[in-house]
Length: 336
Image 1 (tube, rainbow, N blue to C red):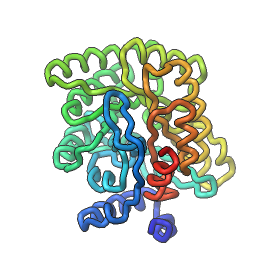
Image 2: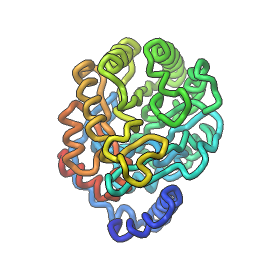
Image 3: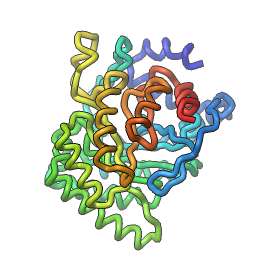
Image 4: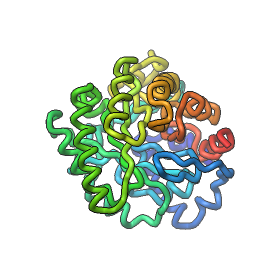
């Protein structure tokens, strides 16, 4: 069905089509039609970060920023859902247009800038959801919080989402919030991870429940930076790492319409960069910190490549825009 609808959606502004698709999924879910149409084959469960995933195919953060469509998205057959990125206070994000398709390269450029309704609204949406599967909540900082005070925003979000998350992802790698990627530098990351480690210990004691924390990193890191991040993940007891976010590179879209737009590039051109980071992380971390692979997965074989490189789970986003929900089943069949 998606192959019939996609040409119509691609005639619309990309962000308008995004919102319309999510609303349509909600309607179809309400009518009970999504589960009837989902043909995700049985897939071997995985135990990762101390959690039991019914299948290894997840939804990446960014598609449902406010957790307003969890039930409909879960009905498509994902093994886990990640919502966000959410910030302490609501913010509109960057001006429109801020989402661009590049069909010739099966790519997308976005510069959303953490547009979201704030952590309180997200938590309320999660409370209303009927979904009881594995839910990741991706947290970030407000655009106007000085970078030297960014840790405060992450701690606020961690406190708010902790009771509602299966795991929490710390997003320090979006290219669309000014200076955010500075938090990947060794000294800044050391301070952030220490604060999160201490706050998580307090929250776990109070709640009697341990919630894993994963770090989401950029694909534009060099070998030395990847090694430093791996060391800090081990030092501060982080439970996972998501590799990767979007790239600032324009390799693969040079000269194409919208190819020079400012923002993060995702889709097929990101695949090899993301896989390289996964390979280097796997060499540095061994089996001690699991990797969630994301970036450029448009076929089952792309997902298998991430797993072979060292990922334990994978996530989809841009591939869904180009392939639709059928991609979930294809990846499950390939991974087995």
